[in-house]
Length: 285
Image (cartoon, rainbow, N blue to C red; front, side, top):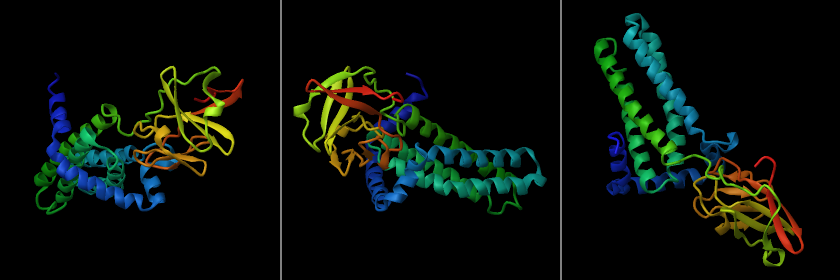
């Protein structure tokens, strides 16, 4: 096992962190879900993918460049370095809010890694803010605090990368469904009742079928957010809601109505031939 992997496995398996992670995630979830527009904004629904990664680039970039400018630019560079660090600190607020929003839907190992990720980034922010105290009297102290902050920021970034690329938090879990390209029979038309979700499997792909106001709709059944089973969700007003985290999608086009999902669900074309419902992937699927 790679040495760098061992600490991450330890964090994933440290169930003692749940004593903090679970109530904190629950509190965040209650706040952000109380207003749908806020929840959608923090999740990134308007742009079609998570908002948090975009904001982290601003924060990390400003803190990193502020530290480097201060380190190599001499005393004359102090105002520019301070401005960059100020930008980093200001951008850390919305970055943390979007991160907390995304983290509140995670569980198990992902939730524990996310908690340590937040702790590392919070420590980094504290160190950068502390570097402003008495900065004119002690340049070495200021630089030392910023270098330490940069170290914690790097640790936080590494944990964030682990969440995204190893734990698959924030990725589109429906993106790689192998949907049938040709018309394929999946269910007898008489077996699909109005407004009742029905799950079927075609060549390993899980699909959701719903008869909505007489029209047969078909979506990928794996929720794009964290892979929840949409065929077990609630169908209402032309939409289906994931039973895991409440993401809501329009049946007609798969578009997100309510987050935390940001990516639309793949939609399939449907028809009835010889008493059988047939489906095929749309050209854009």
